[in-house]
Image (tube, rainbow, N blue to C red):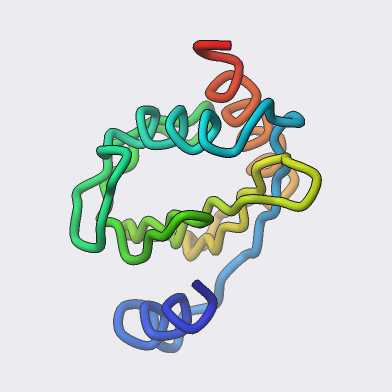
Length: 127
């Protein structure tokens, strides 16, 4: 995931500075369940692959249209116009959002709160 993030940065965001945002979801019941809920919320199939289109919305951020730039059993990466959104299987089960926001007006504290709320709602579904 991290190598592929570097490739995406150099290919699409070279020379731009990112605001890093890390947000933790609630403790999950099982990664397979949490990943399935993440895929549903991102608008992608559970067996998502590089190049699949993603579409989702997050409070205070609005709608996001993007493309999967990386996906494996433990991570999902989405490239959008002004961000790299990365969702990872955390240790101890919480899902981790480790995003890079390239919008010049990104407020990291507000974005963290918004993503934690989004993860909480997303992962509470179906449980």
